[in-house]
Image (cartoon, rainbow, N blue to C red; front, side, top):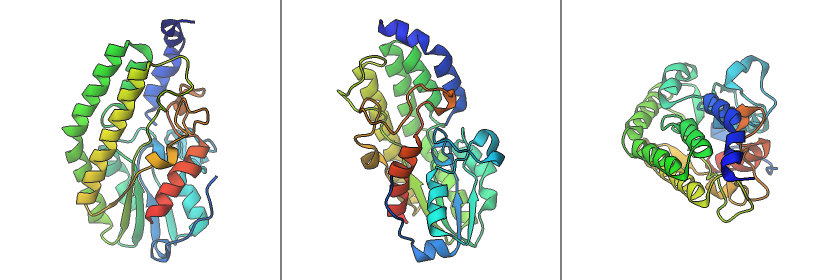
Length: 268
């Protein structure tokens, strides 16, 4: 089957996926972090879209009991736990809709945010449905936003977190690279498209790491944890285009427990 026909067959899934955007070892508790309240903020990578077992009251936010925040609190029993991460969240919607649960008793905060600000869903739609040139242009436009408007948006979010939870340790987690290059995929995106998407992920993580460090927060990358488990690896911890479609390009349960949880745990 030609690449163009394969792409055409994914149209329905890719469009819906765009609208949606969103085994570990024993935990060792940090006593000071677990002693107070833990608040899990962010987008679909923190809410656990793609990991299944969604909490009944989370609605379209799709907060999963397989997501790293839920797994960490279950193992460490913080004094309180507020899980407010939500699919589709941007830095501004996290700032306006999620920070109300923070207060002086909050001792630990986790957050993922930034991917939706730079049009993650639109980029993946362009790359799945369009030509290589269209994909590369879309990726480059996203990178321009990463280097242009995103730093200020992250600063505003981080300032809001610090103002409401002045004593908290704040852990900012990054995003995985999507693709293992020269991997086992025999159809779908070109190698050039996969490389461009990976490079954009590196830029995004670099911007988030710099802004979080300047805010006095801890940045924890998940790239090492997902290495060997990217798409095209043969043992992917990420969904490609999937059914249900909102799972597309999100971590599976194994990506939360084997990727995000260890990265978070190592920073706490």
